[in-house]
Structures are given as C-alpha cells and as structure tokens.
Image (cartoon, rainbow, N blue to C red; front, side, top):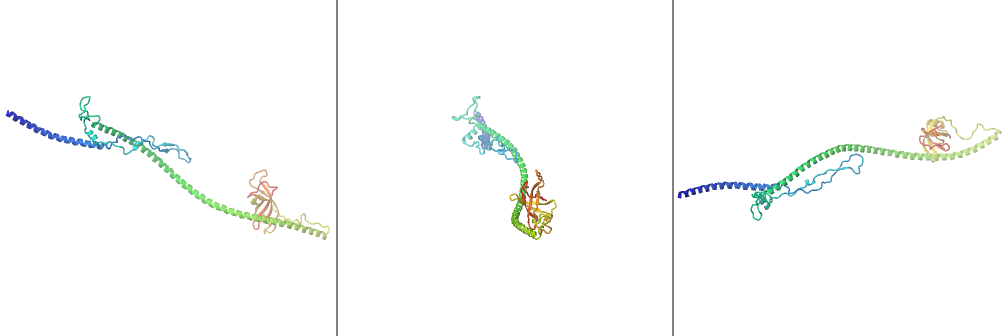
Length: 379
C-alpha cells in the first residue's frame, strides 16, 4: 500500500511539474496573443480613422461656360457656349468628411468579441444552423471589420473616380493651354498690327496738322486776295465813273472843236471815221491770252491772269498805254455740251498795277454756265 501511495505521489508530482511547464508555456502564448490582439485592435482603430464613414453628398457642378464661337472681327452678341464641367462629380471635392471612429468603449468591446454575446445573459449566441457559437452578425468583430471593408471599398471607388476625373482635367487643361498658346501667338500678331496702325495714325495726325496749317495759310491768303479784289473792284468802279465824266467832257470839247473848225474852214469835213470817240483799240493776235484765277458769279466779274505777251500786246512793252476795252471769250477745257467748251464772253475793265491781273465784266447775254477757276481766256 505504501509503495502504491509513493508511486501515486511521484506520478502526481511529475504531472504537477508537467502542468507547471505547460502553464508557463501557455502564459507566454497567452501574452503573445494578448499583445497581438491589442496591436490588431489599435491598428484597426487607426485605419478606421482614415476611412470616410459615408459618401459625400451630391452637389451641383459649377456652371462654367466656354465660348466656342469663331474668333473674328465680327461682333457676336450671343456667342455659342459649351459647359466645361458637364457631368463633373463636384462631390469629389468635398473635404473633411467624418471618418469611422472605433475608439469608443462599445466599439472596442465589439472588436474584442470574436463570438457574439447575448446582451442580457452575457453568454454566447448559438447559430441556429449548427448550434455552434456565432462569429458574425451585429455586435461581432466580423461586423465591424465588414463595415470597415465596405467603407474602404467605397473610398477606393471614389479614389478611382477621382483619378479618372484628374485624367479628364489634365486633358481639358492641355486643350485649354494649347488654345491659349495659339491665342497668345495671334495676340502678338494683333499687337504688332495695332502698334503699326497707331504709328500710322500718328503719322496721319501729323500730316493732318500740317495740312490744316497750310489750309489756314491759304484761307488767310484768299481773304487777303479777296480784299485786294474788292479794292480793285472799287477802284474800277471809281475809274469807270471818272471815265464816264471824262467822256462827257471830251464829247463836249470835241463838239466845240468841231464847231470852231467849221467856223474857221467852212464846209470842211472831219477826217477819219470815228475820230475823237476816245476809245483805244489795240491790235491783238488770235489765241489763248490767259486764264481765270477767280470768279464771282453773283456780281458778274472775274479776275484774269494774262500772259506777259498778251499784256505787252495790250499795253506796250513798258505797259504805259491805257488798257483797251476789249471783249474776249472764255472756254473750259474738257467741257462737252450743246455749246461745246464755250462758257461766255467778257469785257476787260481794269488792270492791277504791277501784275498781269485784269478785272473783267461777264457779259450775261453770252453766258452759258458760271465761270470757274482755270477757265481759258482767248481772243
């Protein structure tokens, strides 16, 4: 009996030693499992914080219209436009969306629940199919991991869609940059043309100022000449009145002389037909004698610029003879009408001293059209 008890005690001692060894080994494994589970739990919580809890709400895309009408110098009141962000998912731009939060006590307990526990009894819920403890469903670790997986897949889908939109955006930006580069080339050409046009405008402006100055000078010269013409006309009218008086006096004197001659030589006749009529007649050759430099159709007079030869024929080489009262013709080169190039006849009246200018009266009975500058005077 003692031997049996001793053997049993030795066996129990050996089993106790073996049990202690297994306990030590199990404790080490348990610590490894606990550490692994804790690390797994913390990493799942961290990963969950990077996963969006829900999709971003739909928002309307920005209404940006691109002008696609042709660029030309024609004004376009309503250019044709095309939406730039058509079918653009603007919700992809939503930032700071809420993420999954598994750091709470309840979520941590669920992460540690490999089996589903009854909330009231705390016992394992058995599967109706095989009667074993359930490992999935609400309240289990698998449910949280499935939720995390679903949201990760949804976020991956958003990421893929974002990459696709980035590709489209790159293509759109490339197209717009190409168009902008072309527009810049055209813009440089337009700026050069505009610069040349401005330089030409400045040149024309300078020429305009010069022409305006010349016009002002010519206007002043014309006013001065008009004043001289008016003075010459007044002198002509005064001389005409004086000449008329002298003609009357000359006629009276000639009459007296004639009476005296008849008394001295009775029966004698005056010699030379038309003698004593006071008219100076000059012998002019036929041809062009000058041109019209000014004309006044209202007062029916013109100013003629005679050639030097014509002035010598009418007034002598020294121009000391009186100006003969001649009638001359006026014609216009290139004029075609029923009367040909004939304009009118004029009667010369008074010369401007020291110049080849002569004032002449327009004979209205002969006038076909108004006299103009540069008309030709011929005899």
